[in-house]
Image (cartoon, rainbow, N blue to C red):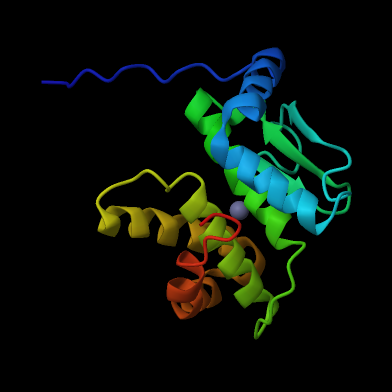
Length: 176
Ligand SMILES: [Zn+2]
């Protein structure tokens, strides 16, 4: 017996991504809170805006999106996005990074800073609606370790995520 599996949805085109992004910018309460928080801290943090573009074949091809603090923009990798939820979750994740890049915080090391940011971005973004709590925390944990690993190596990433998890997962600024 072979179980039927629905084929994955096709990726978004740049145009579809841009249209959907437009709608989300107008209607998502979460995105509105983050944009307002970013604006309050620094009006220029997103001066180049939020754009959709394909990432396959670039050095960002393993990502669904990223915040580029040097060029002051969020990029959504349309060729990795397959639904409105993907798009909104990725946008919330990256806007959380943009917001955090403007905050002053004290961290023991760069890895602690990165781990905390990834925990927050995953908790507010792609893991936000998962229940029960245990499964949600597993989602946050796995994604934070994977993203922190890129900068710090696996062993250090696991150790650091563990150290900062409780504090950072409960920090829901600029929400609440
Ligand atoms: Zn991230």
